[in-house]
Image (spheres, one colour):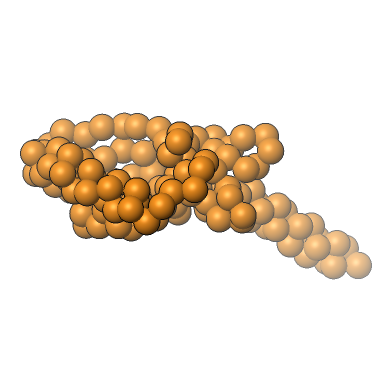
Length: 132
């Protein structure tokens, strides 16, 4: 009986830890996907990862892609590309529907930047918050 209780206790603790970590995994994953797409200069994928509070037309999305290609990609190229990146601390909102995710980007020229980005859960899917 003691062995069974010990086993159940270990299982419960393992479940509790996995439940805690998984709540932060999804916001981290969307930021990792964003950084990977940025590194590959995939502006279409980057735009798909953003949540817009109002409906955005296909034309608007295309405009955002062009803006990314023209401005942000050029800024990254000036720094000799993204050499690596790391997603750091995730601060979850109390309601579990938004989070602030810290990340660090290291560029080919040796510089690095640490930023924070807001992510939101929309219809069960985590997306970057566009603020628009």
